[in-house]
Amino acid sequence: MPLIRLTAPTGSLTEEGRASVRRELAAAVLRWEEFPDTAFFRGLSWSYLIELPEGAQGTAEDDEPRFLVEVTVPQGPAPTRDKAGLVADVTEVVLNAAGLSRRDAGRVWVLVHEQPEGSWGAAGSVVRHADLTALASAQATP
Image (cartoon, rainbow, N blue to C red; front, side, top):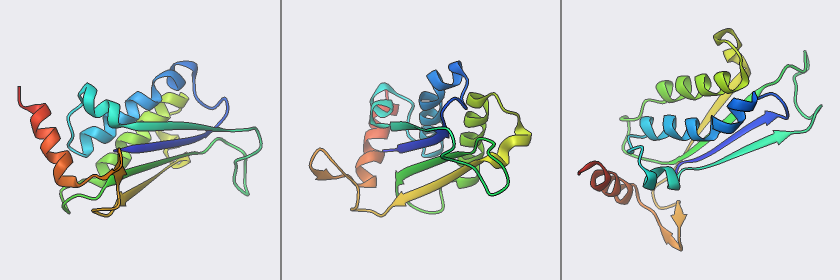
């Protein structure tokens, strides 16, 4: 939690962007999910960069690079989570990593998947939102 997958064409990210995009995406998701940006929660934030071979992605119109970010998080109490803010920040991270401008934002799609309570497991046990909230409170309290 969270689980982040960025699918992008090979070579579409800058060298600097490729090196930092997973860490920056995790920071954005942790912020919007209201979990502390601590070593513990960064360690729970799994991310994957899936690079597609040349010609494997495009539209019927052109082959300009497109980016798909899938963010999977445990479902929490609604409506406290701001999906619009999460989508905007994740889009900005990807644009920066690819060296693109805001006018290219339409080339970044973000899908947020919320796992229903009781359907997320780790270390052989079900992880509940209340457990994560308690861990976050403990991490935030010095």
